Image (cartoon, rainbow, N blue to C red; front, side, top):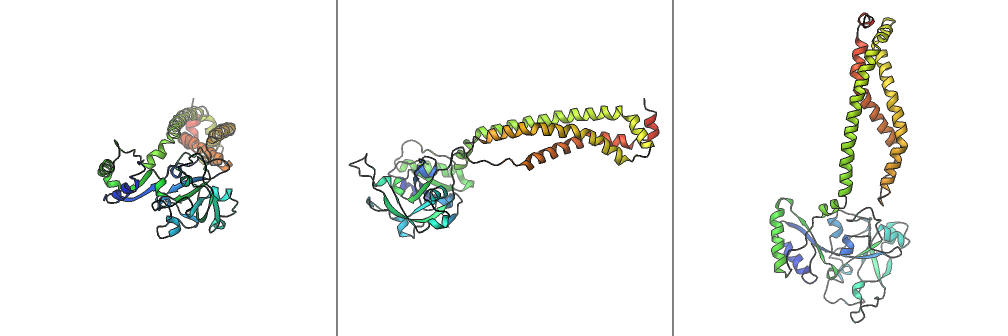
Length: 340
């Protein structure tokens, strides 16, 4: 929920009184949507106590913010002054950027950074001086934005006055009533119109609507291709076994077992599938690798994945032609030899 700057704190307190609201905290825009920092700097991210816990995160080293820690809350007071610097938490990228080999190495160290809210209002174009803060924790890289963009280095600190977003955890059984109560509180707090509300899971899902659509289209097309291939293979199996009826009868008369005949027929139908997979592998690897290049974080394409796909294709082919092969192998040699 995006809020006007002044009533954010009061609105947070009021929301806590709503029965169906389990947790309310403030969050700055830079902390909610990362990826705005430069290549040689870390992005400051004002948050509230409980922000990382709300996202289901755990510290890689050190601790998260706490109201019982005075250094964490030095900015949670009226007019803290430009010289006051709070304790900070780094993400993994920021820890690496600052030269720490391990997350634990950063905890307890002091860094100099610029807090934009410490700017002199009489000199809006002048950057505030960098001042020291103690690092109390390191959190893993995470983002509520798109993974198409690399996660930038970020420095988090508690500064409610610089946050314009309220994050609330709602009771899923009473969402309509809760949203109506939030709208009433918004108007009571002096907000114009309706608050800008967004569910986190839906907002994240909206970033990948094109991927979801592509997945559905590809799945449907792949299903149709498999169905058509199976129908063609089934018809080919029927034609081949009928054409080789006498050959099967001769083999049976010469002492071949049912298993020998079935193995012969299944091996014949497996060869085209194996060759088709070997031909398709380079094209499939190129297409998948080209598609994955659109993401900053992506999986690898190991060889076993293609081998597994080939094994599945062979299994589908064998299951398709098994019935014809079994019936042809079980036929009596005398009947097969008389077949015209």
